[in-house]
Each structure stands twice: as C-alpha cells, then as structure tokens.
Amino acid sequence: MSIRETLQRSVLSANAILLTGIAVLTLSGCDSAVSESAPPPPPKVTVSNPVERELTDEEEFTGFLQASATVEVRSRVKGHIQEIHFTDGQIVENGQLLYELDPRPFQVAIDQAEAQTTAYVAQKTAAEKDVARFTELVKSGGASQQQLEKAIADAASYDAQINAMKEQVRQYELDLEFSRITAPLAGRISRTLLSRGNLVNAGGSDPLLTTIVAIDPINAYFSVDERTLQRIMKRHREGDGGAKKTLSEREMVFLFGLDSDTGYPHSGALDFADNQVDQETGTIQIRGKVDNKSAAFVPGSRIRIRVPIGEPYKAVVVPDSAILSDQDKRYVLVLDDKNVVSRRDITPGRLLDDGMRVVLAGSGNAEALTPSHRIIVEGLQRARINYPVDPVDASTPAADASAPAPESKTEKQ
Image (cartoon, one colour):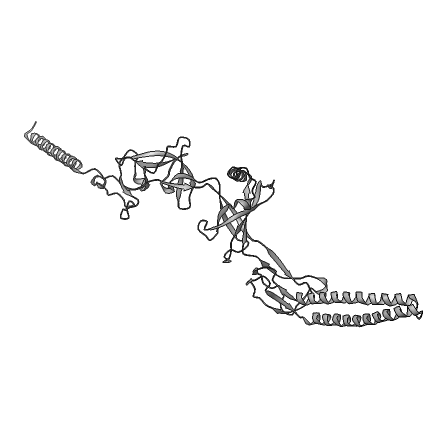
C-alpha cells in the first residue's frame, strides 16, 4: 500500500468518528428536551349534580279548538234590509241589534188587523142587542125561537172573529219585532252575506245572513287512544274509591299550547268523553272547556295538548346533552373524589320542556344515579374514561369549560 492510500483512509476514518460524535450529541440533546417538558394538564370540563324533582307522567296529543256554540243568523220574516248595525268580525253581545228590515209593511198589517177587529166589535154589539130584543119578543110571541137562536149564533160568531183578529194582531206585532234581527248569543260575528237593500226570505226561501260563534268559553277537542283511556279510567277508579263520577265532576286539568306558543302555557278542564270508542281508529274523542274572556283563542285553531296521567312522584333528572350513546346503551360520565372519569350506564326517560331528561331507576342493567354524583355536562369530547379532568362547577359564572385545553410542548414538536 502506498503512502497516499494510507493517508486517504486515515482522513475517512476521522470524518466517520466526527459524524458519529455529532449524532450522539444531537440525540442526547433531544432526550434532555423531552425529559425536561412537563406532562399536559388535565382538560377542563363543566360538571353538575343531578337534580331531584317532583313530576307527573303526562301524555301528549294534538287537537283543535271549537266554538262552544254556533248560530246561523236568518230572518224569520220577509222584507228588505234597511240597516246593518254591526261591523264584520266584531264581538257582539246577546240581544244586540244586527239587521233592521223595513218596518212599514208590518205596521200596515197591524193597523189593518186592528181596524177589522174594531168592525167585528161593532157587529158583535149589534148582535148582542138583537139577542136581548128577540128574547123579549119570544116571551110575548112577537118573534120565533129560531130568530132568537140565530141572533145568539151571530153574537158568538162575532166574538170568535174578534178573538181571531186579536191573535192576528199579535202575529203581525211579532213580525214587526222579527224585522229587527238581534244576536241570539254573545260571540264573534262573521261578515254579512247580504248587504243593505236586499230582499230576504223572498219566495219562501230562507237565506243565510251571517253566523255567530261563542268564544267564551271555548272547547278543545282531541282523540285519546284506547290504551291511554284505560289507564286514565283505572287511575280515577282507584282515586274515586269506586264512585262513578263523570269527567266534568273529576275536574281534570289539562295543558295546551298553540302552534306559535313555546311549551304549554294555557290550561283548561276536561268535561266530556264520547260514549264509545271508534272501532276504525281505536280512539275516543275527549272535550275540554277553556276560558276565553280575552278572545285570544280562535275556533278552528290547532293545539298541542298535555294530559297528566298518574300520581306525582320524585325523579332524578340530568341535562339531555350530558347523555352519551354506546350502541343500544346510554350512559353519563361521572367523577370520583379524585376527579377521575368513569362511565355509569342509565335508562333515560322522557324529555322535559327545559331540556332535562328523566333518569329511570332500577331499569335493566342501569345503575342508580343520585343528586350526590358529579356528572360532566360540557366538555364531554375532552374527557377520557379512567383519566383525571379539571372540573368546573356549572354554577360558577366565571368558568369557561368550553375553552380548549392548552397544548403541551411535546405536541408542538
């Protein structure tokens, strides 16, 4: 081997040793950085305690409002409409004047009947005098018995005609009264179907003038399925001690809301159930009575109805957003005294209006949940089972559990 080759191999060996040393130092520096970085802090979550409430099982239905009474306003007599005394759609009182027909024909008929009555009274007076005269003449033989009997019959005939004309006068007076068409009940009136100047009840026809619906109280109708009906009947048989009471006597309160309402802000009392179940639908129609003094409810409106079923009971409720799913199971995340997360299976019940969900106790493999537990209600995606978390009470205003957890130095690298 030449001197030149020997020198080249020496240089290569020295470079290899230098590179190896640099690599070792670099790895040592990284290990020191990793060993010196702090572990990530536990993620922040918001926790809350389950709440115990007194609840009553309820059933929900859909129904509609209907006027407690509806009247079609028609004229009883024939005549021309002279005046209309209401505005379309207004609230009218019982007995309020609605239409006024031309009264002159009716007054003429009354005057004619009274004049005819006066004529019959005069003829009756003359007949009675004939009866008195023929009575004396029969005694002296100056008149026959037949003439006396005819005079008596004439007087009786005139008396009957007077009574008939008096009744005719009463009839004409009623016609005059009926020419003033009044509201038969209080409520909201529809639009007028005939305007001023039209002839009503012409040719024996009976045209509709308008309609009135009673609005206070107003009725709520809905249908109940047969199974729910049996539950209600069983409950009230037990509560009544066997006494046979009607639905109105039980004074069952129900809640309802319009389509524009949130929840069920209005209430009424059930007062009627139909006498048989519809075999085609398996339901029975129920009616409730609702006060409507402010006229806020309009007949025909659709409503949502909630009826209490059963007696009040105490139940534990949790926010519905705190419940997680694992296939067919439902569970919540619970913290122990060391803030370590664990899973607790539950059986959820019905959802309440405020977003709380009832937790049923002792159902299947579900575990009991009490107000003493602490459950995670926000930050569920950051919590891991068997790992600790940094809990913030939901009642603490300054807590911001929704803020993301700080990243560690290792994660940045």
